[in-house]
Structure formats: structure tokens, C-alpha cells
Image 1 (cartoon, rainbow, N blue to C red):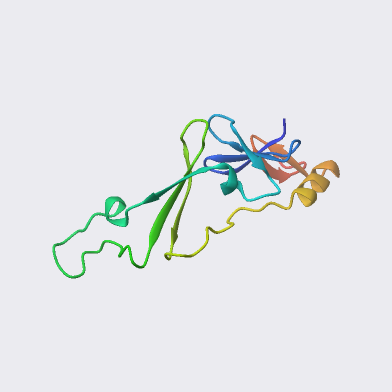
Image 2: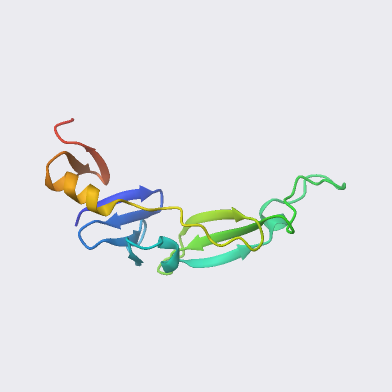
Length: 125
């Protein structure tokens, strides 16, 4: 399996073109689609994540009328894969996209290799 580390908790199986959990290997869906489609999502109360620091009009805690916090988890093991801070009503963003065709072409041409989950130029020690 040609596993490419994409983030701390996210890998891509290049042969199968699938997103996989970096901890348990759970299949998270097509790598040609947004990985968040295969993740569980939880909306968090901003004050729960960032408790008020002072008792005043401005508490240094995000205003829930201005921000929402979304956490994305692996459905296989519960590992948190990503977090988003978005204005209310804003759609979930598509944050991770790979040029799979170009990566696979460069691997096939021998320009790059996968070394311990990371792309590096071929011939580099």
C-alpha cells in the first residue's frame, strides 16, 4: 500500500485513492472527494472550548453569534481529524485536496518516492 501522510491524523492510500484515518486505518471515502464527507461532525459551544477569562462585557471567549466551532472525527476510532472555526451559516469548507493524477504520475516516472509516508525527491537520502 502506498500510504501518504496528509496531516497529523489523515493519510491517503494512493493505490486505492481513499482517505484513511491516520490512527486506525478506517476508510473515510474517496480521495477525489472532500474527506469531511466521511467524518463525524460535532458542533461545539465556543465558551466550552474557550471559557471566559474575565467577568466583563468582553470576556475573550468567542461570541457564538459570530463563530461556530466544528470538530471532525474518525467514525472508526473517534480520533479528531480536523477543526473549523466558521461564521454561522457558512458552509463547511473543502480544506484538503490532492492532485492525485500528478502525484501518481511523478511516482510512476521515478521523480519522487514515498519514504515513511512522505513524498521526497528520488535519489535523495
